[in-house]
Structures are given as C-alpha cells and as structure tokens.
Image (cartoon, rainbow, N blue to C red):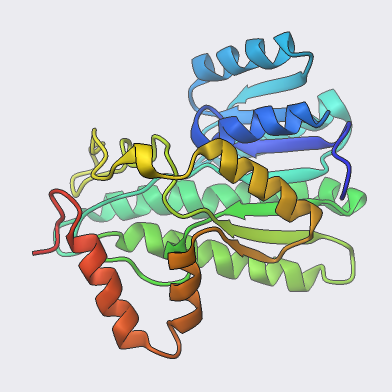
Length: 271
C-alpha cells in the first residue's frame, strides 16, 4: 500500500496523542478517516480542523471495551465510505501499581480496553479488510515484548495483543492481509495522566518528563512509513530494540536493567 489517497482508515483512541496525530497525517495524504474515541467533544474539534484543511472525516463515539461500540464504529464506517482499508487499534489505557496492591478490577479494565478492544474492532473490520487486502495495526509497547514492574495488567494486555495479531497474520497469510505491531516507546501523550492506580483512579500526573519524549506526530509518520514497507514488527526506540533482542540471550541482565529504570521514576511503587 504505497498510496493512501481515498483509502479508508479507521483509528481508535483518536481523540488525543498518537491517534489524533494519525488522523491528521492520513488526511494530509488524502485518506478518508474514521475516528473512534470516548470523548466526542474532542472528536468534534478534530473534525472541524480536518474539514477546514479539506479532509474527509467521520467520527463515532466509541468505548472499545464494549463490543457493540466497536461493531457500530465499523458499520458506520462502511455505511459512509463503503469499505475499510486500514484498521489501527490505537486505543489503550495503562496502570501503575504493584500486583500485591492492585485491585483485580483494574487489571480487568486494562484488559477490556487494550486486548478486547483490539479483538472486537478487528473482528468486525476483518471481512472488509480481507476484501481490500488491507492492513491491521496494533499500537503496542515494549511492554508487549518484556515485562515491566508495576505494570502487570498493561504488560499482560500487550502480550495478549501480540499473540492475537501474530496468529491472525498466519491464519490469513495467503489472503493478503498485512498485520503489523508497532511499539513506539515513551511518547508525549495523555496515557500516563490517565493511567490507573491500585484502586482504579486516574494517576492524574505523569511520572516522566513528557517534553523529552517522542512527539506523537513523529510516531504517526513512522507508522505510516512502516505500513508502506509492510513491516511486521516495528520497535521505535533503541532501548526497546535492545530489550527485544537480548531478552532471550541475557534475561537476568535485562530484568535488572528494566528494574533500575522503572525504580527511578518519581513515586515509583518499587522500593
């Protein structure tokens, strides 16, 4: 897929961060974008901006943890545009707490959004994607390649997404479906602000310096370029690439490296 003009792109979690950046980047390339997110007011603002720039856009209030919402997003997209060429499963939520302290409901909430949201959206988009020999993207994290302390639910959800998408790739190996997993690393966004604590409340403020992170616009550009090149897995940071490469060779050293890094976070749950 070298040319995105008039391609229909569905993006979940599109009200901010990477999802929002993807909406603008695809629109610049002439794609028809269908955005899903819980915050409809944010989507309305994005819609106005994109239409002002001459883009074509559809917005649908969507909580991906609900199967009906995911089905509705795909049905509205097909009703408006007739097809689906690309699905980007970007919606996600994080958490930050030791397993001994975290409530089970928090882990379930993270899994419902990250894993089941990906499953639901892919399930209802798949028939149209197969018709178009289209693309399914899972926006993941290095947490899907190696465990991160204090992020049990988040890591579990990302590992599950990887297994699901890897299997999907093999099942439709002969039918032209392109399946890609991308791991951006730490990106300037609201994901850490909305991360859940042990009781399921939003963290409220990020423990990291957002201004030093990769811009979501940069992530969007790399993601689009990776689709063009039919990448399978794309890890954006050198640290992430090192972890993925050496986790089987030097597992104890990688564990220690990750532990030290996560322990340095302000108010880290690690002692």
